[in-house]
Image (tube, rainbow, N blue to C red):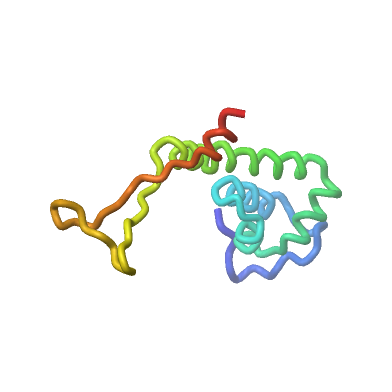
Length: 120
């Protein structure tokens, strides 16, 4: 649950309690963005990193949240781009071309590099 915006900023790692830690971990697992997660918890990434240095349990939880993001967001997106590809417009003289039906022309681009990385 997001921290109340009326709450004061948490400035030090020692003041980063369980509630703020939970907010950070939940948001990090969703977004993969520590800055965003800390802003939601009303603290700084510096305080969170220091707390992780001082608290091995929180450090492990941060690593787990990052792994959850990679497994739940990054990996599926990499697979989609490698297998399904992405649409790229076909341009001619600065304008998007048209297909035989007069619709904008696109081609699918696949990422061989992503596929190789996924297979490693």
